[in-house]
Length: 287
Image (cartoon, rainbow, N blue to C red; front, side):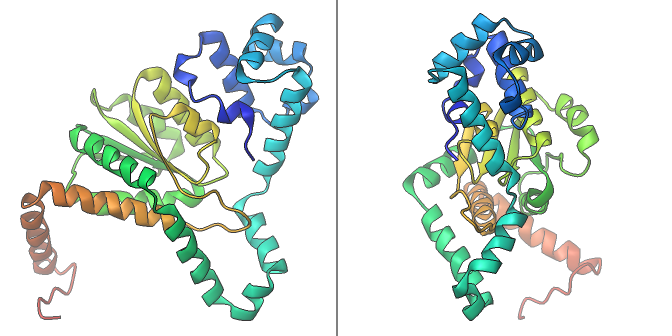
């Protein structure tokens, strides 16, 4: 769903304080908007009605009704999670029923191929440079994105020791963000539909002046509007896959390793030796 309020709000950081109040309320309560009058929304966001109407006009809405219809449509689609998409796909997809796992694997491969584009590759290079310059990197992914966030930390550890993993406990996200050194970055991983924790963390970073990178499959989401760098894969259409996320994160990690070479080669060799010495792995050069 190309929701206008999310699609056209890339300038979140340039919004006035009252505009941010309106936007933040809508982002956090999209399912309630269709039941609210302009007066009720203004009161809830603690702004005047005139301010609300000027802001909606700036975003491209001719009337308040147009705005409500747009946000309501977005909210309905947001309710259809990847679980719902998978269930409906399994029920209706004749190709899947005939080919089973091969169909799933081919679909993931197809999504991955379509993800590789000049824009994505350019953004990966920008992100790598930003990460190499940062004193610390915080990583956040919740729900289906949590496993990907943890994997990203593991493949970065040999090259970048200063990593703060925010995905373990949502209750302590802000304490960890407050401890970041100046110039640090936050890497957000948000598979559609977005979780409120990631949206709020992105909002905090935007207001605190912390640079953010977002890996997402929905570049028109509310989180994308608040982040500095966005790497976007295809938005799922009746099918959800983390394959593009994993491929992009591996590409970032390998590029970082290559730019730090030969230091990383020595580090990896030393790590292999230590793991074998202490019985963590069954290291065998010939095998």
